[in-house]
Length: 311
Image (tube, rainbow, N blue to C red; front, side, top):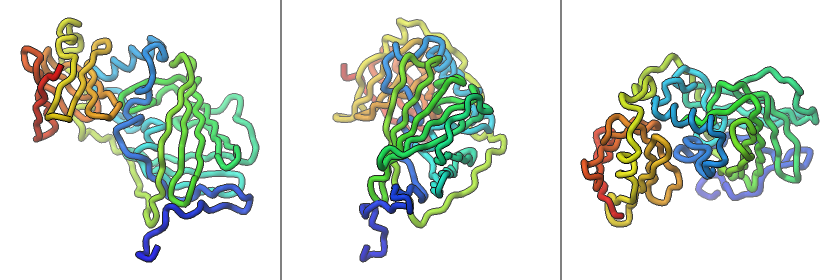
């Protein structure tokens, strides 16, 4: 552009084979969506009962056994949603290098026509093959171990997990990504969601190495109280407001409260510390409800904000 900045709306580059070249450093939409709760759009009937029970237990335990808390890789979709990634595309192979938040990981996607292996060695990122569907690169990945989490909040998966990614570079600086999750042992049906990726020109990746990090105390253990009477939980359910036009909805699911703020569809799980204090599994923030359930104070580090029940 005349100001020296790259024109992200320019046509997408193509390789010698005529297909879009996905090479470049790409960033995801950022935290606060499917990276936290990959099942946010699902109905309760879409999740196997054992998997929902594991998820709620992990929330109550504040992620004590999370892979991240043990210096192991983050969830598969998290790397796409939050972290920078370098795509290197050459004939027969696409290499994806993730910067990582706790660990840098890499993936090799074989585009030379080979099928997925019948019995691959189980890994954290799986074994990937890709093929072109028009201008969209379709990547199938299987061969996962069963030790990973699907999101930061703690939805589990099994070794039957299969993930399909559809990458479409629609212009120079923008790429559409659709992910389909298929794990019949964990979910009753496959489901899909979209992430937008944006080119990050003149940017490089940094090395990220986890060194037994213990800097986030809320990841190291559960809350003192893990069971609250349903009558107490239901007392807090409803719509509150921080201020006119700034709603927050509190709902109940199982033994947990969930908080949804504004237009963001993401519901953050809250585990009980006492009958009136609930802590966020995600970031350690906590809510303190009044005895009559008509208001609460949201404590986020040194900041506090009060919400009053609207209905």
